[in-house]
Length: 439
Image (cartoon, rainbow, N blue to C red; front, side, top):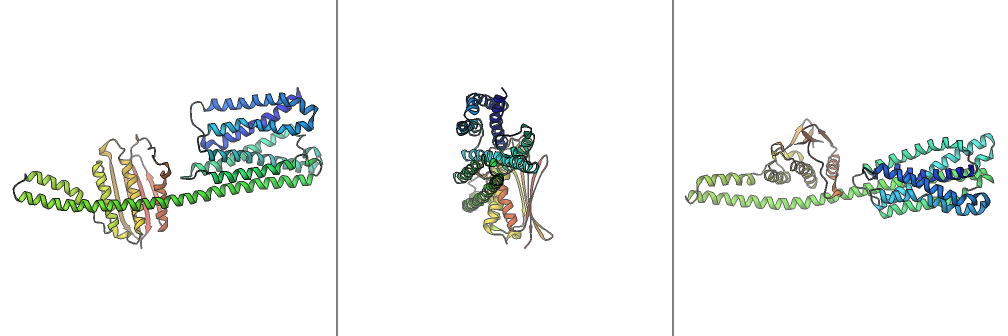
């Protein structure tokens, strides 16, 4: 009975450790539903049942034919990994390549925990001159009290890195190339580990060197993995910002063409109406009301910067159509030193974000947008304010690739001119302030 419990404990702890590691490391990708706890319990129960079945199958072999057992036991441990593999690939809500990343992270995490634990045992064994500490087979169960604190520290530390990497990323998603690199790194690790088996019984110093090399490789692999992720994220973010700026340029060209056409048509229509009114062929009141309507479209803001004028005109027309109160007090000459594409991208993002939000506020009387561009001391202040609604449900972006990049683009442009961005939210108002040194 004691042999059965010992074998069962070895199998169960291995399976449960992998499963719990995948749950903790993949926390950022968990599907949230009311059955989450039940699903985790069922998987944990599966680890118990699978461990009991494999113990029943392999126990007699481990007692009576140890060499054959050692060769076939790899099958048992491969099967014990099934619960965590199924969990990762069926119950994590993310891309297939992110799932591959969590799979490799789980394996590397266990390897690091295991090697730290074995190294401590080796050093203790050398200190007290006890060779039983150098082998895989004779593991004093009391040492589990050391193993699992190491496990908790390592797993939660790495889970925090995964959370920071993916939760705070605006754009990064694992891809085939990066996932392949991780799998190759893991594959190399599998070639290193078997060389250590039973080496402690023959050459403890070579065994120790291999443990240190294996542990060092795992840490280097982790460094390469996260370095590659951060490099790829920066590259993708840079490409996305460039694409956004190109899109802003194209949109601005269309807006300018439309604004120029509207101004021309309004100018012609105003003269035609006045001529008709003088001839007495049209009702004077109708003419005056029509002229007032035309003035809305023909009255272009003059800031001293033609690019800013076009952007403000476009937003003004949008606000009129959607019953948003829009005010702009801007000295465009203050930003004349900025590149034209930066002006387009900066103000388009600021005002488009604001108008998109205000459009969703049901009470039309609460809708407002205010833009100010002014100089204070040796700095240029660009301030946009708009109303906030407590009852507004967060918007689900149609194009998730651009989600969060409007603000990133604004910050990038401000940084280009040695400026900074600050955002203040209170109960009823959103305010974004950009401070740039005057030139």
